Length: 58
Image 1 (cartoon, helix red, strand yellow):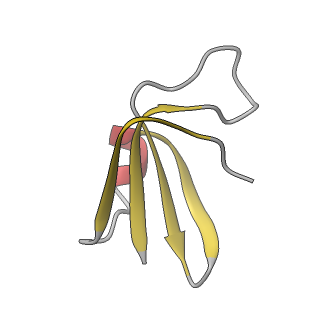
Image 2 (tube, rainbow, N blue to C red):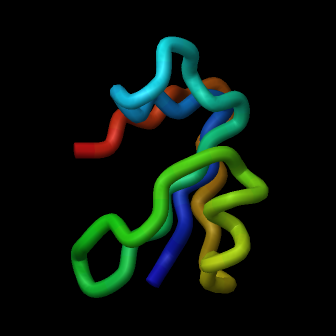
């Protein structure tokens, strides 16, 4: 399980990107997507910081 952290996240459900945004991945599947505070509640200890990047889960 790990978490990707980026400056922006476009989830396709909102008009504006989340800033910052995270994606949590477990067992090869996306398990959480959202703003940093939302996704980090389910976050593992392994975090990959991607400064200057935009995440687009899918």
